[in-house]
Length: 214
Image 1: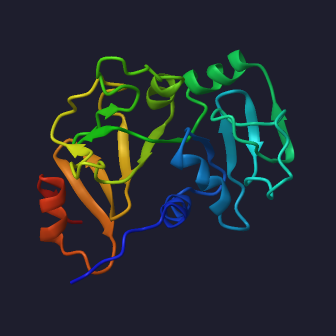
Image 2: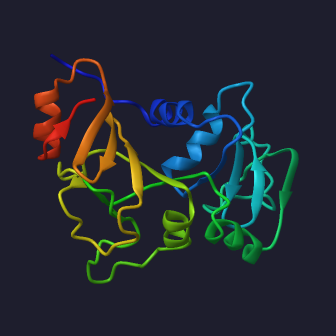
Image 3: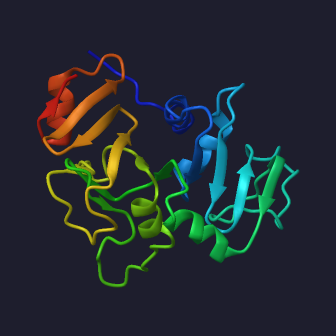
């Protein structure tokens, strides 16, 4: 059977559907920022950015961005009524103090048990880019990852054990990818959902690991 991968916006919408009403959520640099555009109407979900914003809204309309109001990835954002911006140190106090319900991060690798590697490939000349990822991964009550399942070389980013420098140990609870959603557990990967037309056997072959079903 043939299957269609989720587009980046479809993936962002899938992540947004799992965020509960009232949650305080940090969206990491890259793909996770798209989640802000897909928050279901009627929910109060408070978005935080590590550079010091609480109460972010969706991306501004083309040409309406204010570069004095940007997220951690230097993209223009909007501010919802009641939103605020503040010192970087206060933002990190929120992150480290356990005040975030969820953080959504990108990743180079995630292990089946939830180890996270998302700041360096370890290659010579690679520029370290950890930012606040270590603080977020450990400080948030739940860490979710949003990424393509495969690298450009066709290798799975879901692995038995990370080979890249680690960001955090056993911190990832869920991994949202372009072909399926996975829970990381002490027993290994568990399938939450997958795109229509992709068989379980095909998915296990792509990942190279056993994937339990609910």
